[in-house]
Amino acid sequence: MMHVTTDFPAAAHEALGDKSLQAALARMRQGFVSGRASAVARLPEFDAYRDAARAIRDHTLAHLDAYLEIFEANVKAAGGQVHWCRDGAEARETILRILQSRGAKTIAKGKSMVGEEIELNAYLEANGVRPVETDLGEYIIQLRRETPSHIIAPATHVSKAQVADAFRAAHTLLPADRSLAEADTLLAEARAILREEFLNADAGMTGANFLIAETGTSVIVTNEGNGDLSQTVPRTHIVLAGIEKVVPTLDDAAVLLRVLARSATGQEISSYTTFSTGPARKDDLDGPGEYHVVMLDNGRSALLGSAFHDMLRCIRCGACLNHCPVYGAVGGHAYGSVYPGPMGSVLSPALAGIAAAKHLPHASSLCGACEQVCPVRIPLPKMLRAWRDVSFDRGLVTLRSRLGLAVWTFAARRPALYRLATALTAKTLQKHRAWFRLVPGLSGWLATRDFPASSGRTFMAEWKARR
Ligand code: SF4
Image (cartoon, rainbow, N blue to C red; front, side, top):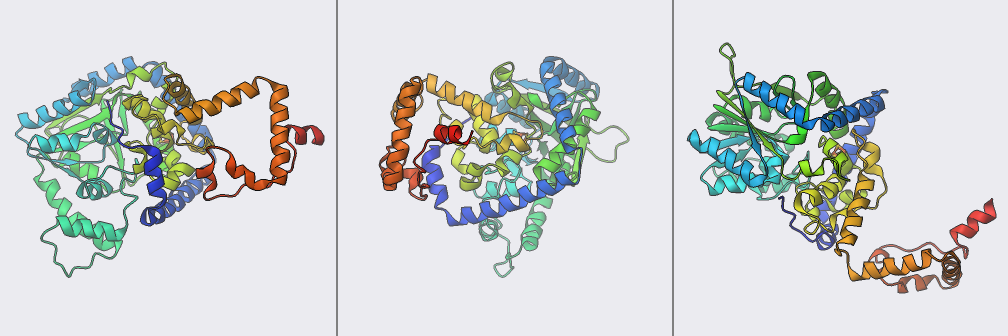
């Protein structure tokens, strides 16, 4: 089970008043959205690639058991090992067992959202292993003892000044007079520290963007090269991945890579795309002596064939977060889950249970921007509505919402009454616009917005008149 920690309405309210967060979110929205738009414009066949990517993911999920077995057989043939884990606890214990059996005290970690999902770092620390995050964003939030606020840009909420403060607090040998005012000085400082960590780590860990069944290969994409150092310098390489990451062939991975980078960061391809198959062979110049793949279910197989099956197509590009007006207004921490935004609002209730994540399916305007940009065409709004149904059926919505829906349902089932009530309301609001503020439940919405004056006619009356 995954944890969801916050009460979304209260956390969102707080986030809206956080000026530093709002400035960071404005920068993020601009960069990612325009980057994706220009990358897509440069590839006229982008939509055809999206269709192909969707078909690959659908085919794989329809035969997931078979492709997982093929993947395992090919990892073993290449000299590696596969460990199957039903939940986060099993995955944490498996990783710790591998590390303890090698006497490992430190582990250099490339970025892994699954590692965040199972809260791996806290567990390793409690058991005498020091994890070091080597992706710059992950390193920053590790120093700040935070969770990621974005699935591809974990420290997007942190300003340069806050990064400098975190470095000064943690890097005790950093001279007080060294400037950390600019991005390049911050990068140089992080690079110097992390270089030593790579060299001294007893083991390395990465996530996997894809796992290729036909070759038993794990694939990672990064822009910093930290994943490559995490997996080639230490003696042991552990890959941690969800079971849905498998794809049949190298050709399939190539199609998915073409839509991934464009959707995520607006790049044609990420700076580093690395394919790893088994431990180092006799003639290899470098590479780990051992290669382990820890495969996590943690609720994923229960989604197969359910109303949320399509969510398993997700390739974690982050485009739905970048284009979501709700995520753009409140940032990732308000969701209280390591998977925020539209994809998180569908996935978190599935992995943590709807009771724990009951607010998240409602954290959406259902505008549909997420589905429009999703590279594998996941119908996120449809699934958010499905979670709302589940939430309603289980009595998890507020009494006020239930009463409101009951009143609306009563009127909607009686067309004459509905037309009369809406006509009277439209007429009344034309004469007394301010009365709108008396409608129960709208005070929050109207606190920062006005409502347009009513024309005095309902939508249906306008429609009839125009025809
Ligand atoms: S749901 Fe789609 S857009 Fe969102 S992260 Fe997953 S693949 Fe990307």
